[in-house]
Length: 254
Ligand code: PGA
Image 1 (tube, rainbow, N blue to C red):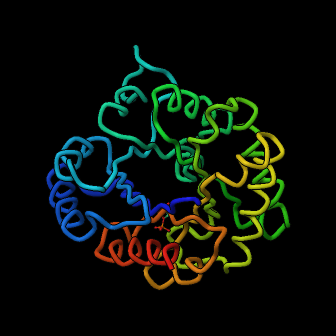
Image 2 (cartoon, protein in one colour):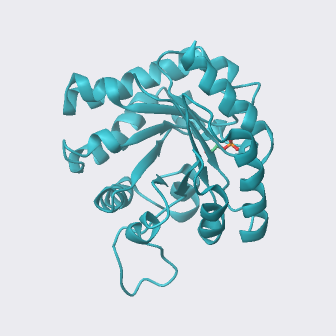
């Protein structure tokens, strides 16, 4: 039984003060919600205040990125061991990192290894562009992303990796694929993981959908036994996140 995840990626929004306040509001409404891992991903500088705000609650914390090395002369970077002092999770390979900051599969894989080495649980984002989709290249793109990762992640670590399927064209656009589209990609991911690590690992992997998720669009996906929750951007900055987390929790408990 895979516990679903409601992951709120705040991106570059909410400084330390606003973030702490918003986390307290979310805590008041989501603490104790069973059947879902509810995880907040504030900007680096707001991690400590949010950690304070949710301490002792069932809400969990993560970073939106990490460095591929543990320490040293890397101005502006934050390492996985530093993040692990306050967080359990880290998002890696988000399409905005790939597109705006030139992150490659090789680089993202090094970050994943650093995160796993520090005891973090990475959520690795993969997805295709609209051009890839229109050219029927979705499977090829997904496979390339995953194979880069799976070549390096050892058998005893894959159980701590979560995959977020986020088609680039669905992020922040209001456009979402339908349930069948997502289930098709999830099936490809599970098959690739099973081929590399065995059936049990394929079955156990948590696979999220991300891209324009709201309390309305989530209804398309919550009924699916194959989709294990969502990575939520814009809607995670509003009260809608509470409704989404509840919808995900309920879908798996009935
Ligand atoms: P969105 O972002 O929900 O605002 O589309 C999703 C994401 O980037 O993870």
